[in-house]
Length: 197
Image (cartoon, rainbow, N blue to C red; front, side, top):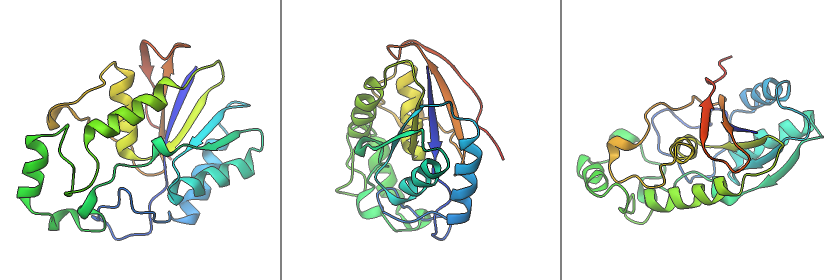
């Protein structure tokens, strides 16, 4: 089976802003285009799970409108990481000391003072990954951080203790990649490149 990892379309915020848990909308035109492109590729009966944040739900709804055969559900485990007090701030306005505190305890530090830890994100994404089973393809409409966590988990990495272990290769907004999985989600077999439009 394949697990499709789809990142939402670009959001309607200025560039350079942290918006992990903020529930901001995506660009409607880019969302429609992404849904159209994806609808042509997904197999019949694929199971679609979406983050509850509206930028992902928009894409899921457009996609289901084009492909009523797709089974759609919302899964809170696919929401983006909560960056606490960093939410809504420009990345370049966050003090270096705040980043240093996170990287000193990458797995266990509550980002932004009261946000999530990487350990918590990996646990919830791992739980969602373990629940993906069956012969039909699964589609996750989600976020960059969740896609990176999923790639680690698919490689058998459930814990990340250092910042340099976190994948840097992400997907641009409106792109996707697939992971080929055995029926029990293990072992990781291969990843196809992101689709670029």
